[in-house]
Image 1 (cartoon, rainbow, N blue to C red):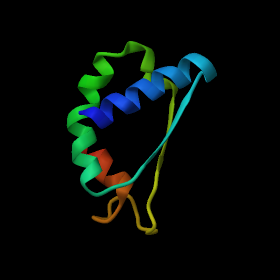
Image 2: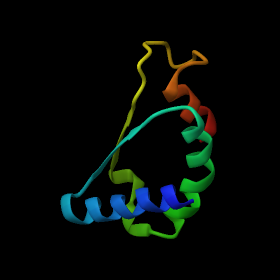
Image 3: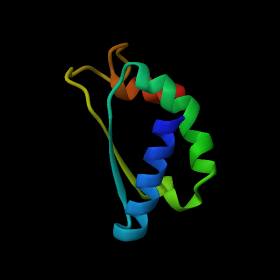
Length: 79
C-alpha cells in the first residue's frame, strides 16, 4: 500500500507540474501488488489522473503479449 501511495503522490506532483507522469513497471510480484493497491490509492488522489500517465513495461524478454512471460500480458490480465 505504501508503494502505491508513493506512486500516486509522484504522479499527482508530475501531472501538476509537467502535465504527465511516466512510470516503468517490472513484472513479478509487483503485478499483483499494484493490481490490489493502486486502484484505492488512485481513488484517494484525483490529481494523479491516470489518463496523463505514460506507462512502459520493463521486460528483458522479447515475447508476444499472450506469452506467460510477458510483463505487459501479466498487467493486462489483472485489469
